[in-house]
Image (tube, rainbow over the protein chains, first blue to last red):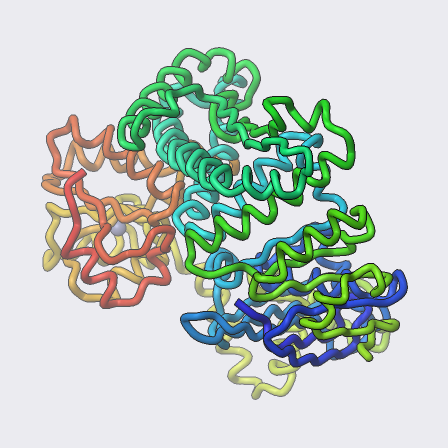
Length: 381
Length: 203
Ligand SMILES: [Zn+2]
């Protein structure tokens, strides 16, 4: 998959930007705070409809355009996929510094956000990602959920439904606790929680198995001392991972119901759902040791790098197409050997878009295959 | 809207404010509608005004089906042309309009005025469920069609009703086929709705 065209209007520090891209890697370079990351962010938003940097979409609006009467922030991207070209457009209308309407179009037809996810897949790697190994479990769940949602539309559907059930169920538990509802009203929500939850659990396991297939080789190449990296899934509901999917489906469903029954009293007292995949975690094991707890910063960084590369392989395997890889100022964090290894590794992928403050940190062999864009204060040279 | 320039005439400012309170109407639409009305001939404005007053003064809730009506009982509940053994349960009066548009349905209705949604503090007791049950005990109902929306809350409500109605020995069916998951009756097109009605299934 490639991006062939990008158009930004009043986005971050870009008033108006129009770029055509050839089928090549792209190196975006320039001083700090010129707008390099903003470009990657815009691409990421086209892929997921949301930013990885902020949940406050007001920040997208170009600061100096806030007071302009014709108030729109817009991102348009054209992509070349094997099944044909695709155009994604995200319009955000605003008034009085607030976003009043967000519209998403695919090939000029209005779509919901959930219909856009999976159309154009990207793998983002930025400095913050190192927290994936050592940070709170919610970061890892979000990561799992994003990958699975991009390759499996039913996963996204189940996830959205699961989250809605969770909200409704937690409210109902509180109402029961306060004597304003009866416990038998839980039955419907318990059933929905377990049906959608089982789908999430099984597909999280499937994805982790899939990633594990390629991450071992990738990590061995990146870690000169031939260490072995493995992802380990820690579902809240324990089950036999060796059993077949069909067996597990029934098994987990049964366990889910049993545990919901057993913990009903505690759940009502807490006003909170205590059982289910919203409390799952997964860990990164290097030679069977948790790298998030015992690993060095450098080891954690290489671990996440290996995972992201394995993610690209997994995505290709599941969807038939490599995602676009976005690397935000990653090279400066790596030593020369790893930098070279990373570039050698990714050079065979269809399209890498990376940012750097110092173009000289990039190996000549990679630069030769890349378009170089210099960013100066929201303009491209 | 308090930061409108002071030179805007008071009646205009007031009307913009009123429009802005309506669902789906933002500040810009409110302004557009107001200035449109300013240019409107006076008799049109009066007609509009009378229609708004009329829905407050002339409408009541039908004591049988809970639909909004000019009479009590409503025209549908009173009609001898309609099949009184069939009751279609809907979330709100707009759903009745959607069902009536397709002309394929000739039974009665029951409006719940909402759906079960714990996060909004709405439980079964907040809906017109007791009224429905007492209807089923006194009327000669053979089938209840549950036509709540196909989202979680609509399904939760349908499931709840099914558990109450089945023991009464009445056939309970659900609109399903053709309607996409998460879809709302109110916005369904006529062909889809007709198919969903014909393909209704026992639950
Ligand atoms: Zn009536």
